[in-house]
Image 1: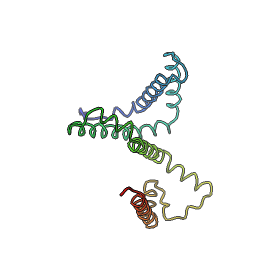
Image 2: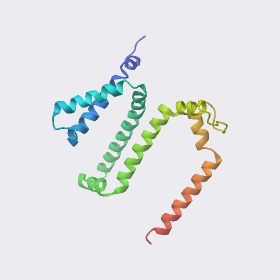
Image 3: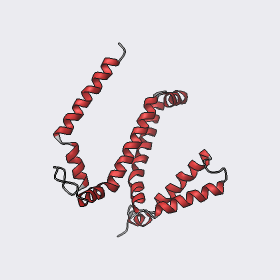
Image 4: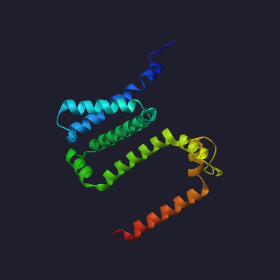
Amino acid sequence: MASVLDLGLLQYFGVIFPVLLIFVLVYAILQKTKFVSESISINATIAICAAIMASLSESAIAMIVFVSPWFILTFILVLLFLLVMKTFGTTDAQILSVVTKDAAVTWTMLGIAIVIIFAGFAATFGQGLVDQSQAAGVDGTGSADSGDFASNIYETIFHPKILGMLVLFAICVMAIALLTGKT
């Protein structure tokens, strides 16, 4: 029985949304930077070609399908944070000055984007690369060799040696921060 919340039909349009996203992003970048031309038709043609080429790759579509909800969630969280800041009386000029002048904000946003893209690559290509390396003769006798990429990542991250290294790294970072900080 079909219901209002049944979104099963949208799975057939799963290719259209990433293709439209690629078209819009490429077109917007070309129009903003004027990298190729100032002509709208040339930029639109290049964007259409890029979108069609991306639609031919199942890996590119899978990557975009995985990454886009995380970017949207991040965007919504940033908007909610800005809404909270505006509620407490922060002006637009103050927010703009912090975003443009503080390098920590820029590096934090860039770091979040890199983590999302890296997770997308891992989710899209991870187990396939592990299977290819084992087929090529790479020794897979480690403890994180279960055949499932997600469990391999979990076992690697929560291995006692890795956790000990992370604790030691955190101690070093804190020591450097405390030793070089202003008194």
